[in-house]
Image (cartoon, rainbow, N blue to C red; front, side, top):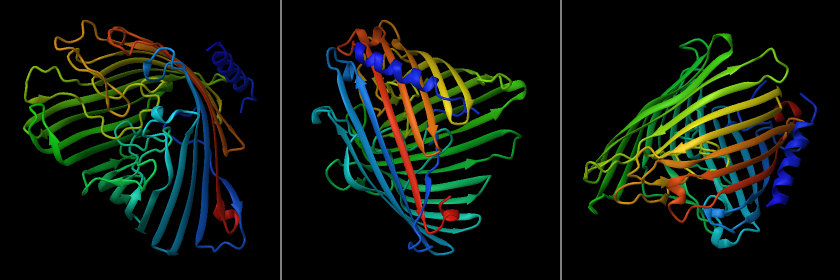
Length: 449
């Protein structure tokens, strides 16, 4: 444990000492650009891309279990082939190969390992301002807190289906898909039929210095079992909006709000969630400090109505650093107060410090993981207190020569009553160091850029 802390502290100090090169978000935006490479014999209608990523992680209490320290390396290799046979048609294929080296197989999570598989494969029929994308593809909307690819995870998420995109700066996506299930040692698949549908708009010029992204999402699952153990179908509608705005005098704000209604076999769905952030940046100071307060709320199930489900369905979010760097919790039955403080002396260098306090929204509902699995089940009478715990995180990002991205971080979770009253009582410290390199090969340098 002391060696891990010394290692993480040294890495943070090293990055802090690098030369000072505007502020960037830690996640979910993929930082850096692929290095442009030339291959003169490559056809002009073809390009190749590659991503290599490795992350060393050290956890002091895997799955909140005392004396279960694990150090391992998550590796990810991706390669893609783009073809442009016609001016109105683009095809893309992408493979991936991911592993968790040094981690016992029994401890490997579903999102950490996928032996050589097809991650994306689609045809894009495009004629401005229209695109129709058919096949295995990514979906990313707003800040990805409702629908995103979860790129921090080793595998990350894709969907099989169709997406019609209309517009450019102001655009609308209309999609019908099914999320891809990763099988670590066999080909990935999706469920029977298309089960996830929606409409999402991205409006950037309607309100000055503001992005508004309203959405309506529908999950239609053919077979579920209600709280009364009755089999049936699920139809869940989620409607809401994301926003991001720059305010006068250095202030800014962003957030998401949505409601969920529908049926889960013979049960009704009544749930909702909200995220709101407010920040202030001092642009005239060399380190460009930015301070931001954040509040997150997702409903739980109070069990006051036997035929009503009140637990918010987090959908398909990018949950990394949503509730701390240790990524323990999902956006269901949870409340969070968080303070974020960042220093960004340049476009390729960021230091981020965060402190948060976590609570259950309903003491009669449980605690959920970032993958929406149940971690702690509430006792029949409910928890005596609502405190899940608190966390402090420090992280940094530095981009070398635009294409090599370095991430380093240290997070510690202090368990509260909800956790210490169960077997998941161990404090957890996570340290990580990650390197990501991407390149793109084209016939000439102009195309590669």
